[in-house]
Length: 320
Image (tube, rainbow, N blue to C red; front, side, top):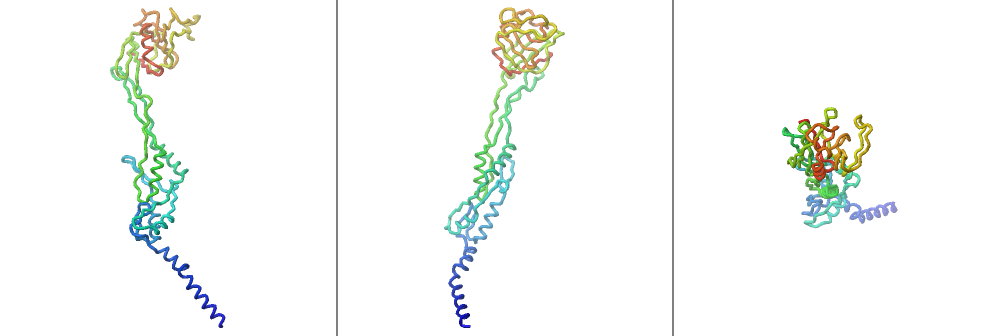
């Protein structure tokens, strides 16, 4: 009995000695309060216990990240962005802080998750630029020009930085995606050719402004000049003439550059590969339906036009 009494006294003494570390310390850590005026991630937590402050910060950090672009708003959850936050470390720093301290939360989105989200967002917000282009002719057969439109693209690096800054604070401001302007390649349409087949006139426009009218010859009734919208696909200086695979050209041989060449000194071939605009040594045919489908011009006129158009210049042929 004496042995057991001594053992009991020893255990009580041991427990009493251990109390400040084994019992009081956990209680103090759990229920000790954050000093007044301390904030975590810009969220005031002064006066709260560690557990209360931890729950408050975690709840705020779990809130969706808001995005704002003009009048449009949307959200992304921290899970979508792969956000992880060291809340425990922040609360420990807050407990050890002084009045007025601002403790930052180490919260970061995972790189793969953020990249996936930004890729989807970039596709949603992207807008391709539009070049100025021909949109047909008006009632007076003048070009109607659709103006160039700027595009936009998401700046991935800048937007990622904005998201990273937002998730590090519990008091979040909406993230505004950073967009960059994409300039169209062609801001002006430039030259446009309108050919009036029946009245034998070629009209060169700069956009909608008439630059010059030139007389032409068009196709015979058996070989009519095709109607429609084309572009200049080929330009040749002092071209060769090669007989086409048509009945009227059977037995004819190629003609080199020089006097008497049926194409004159300049050739501007149209898409489709069937006809083109060219000079002619037969100036007397201008004003008539005399060709096998091509648009003939006086040689000086063809040389002038050659210098004022380029590959891709629109050509509209109408029956007027």
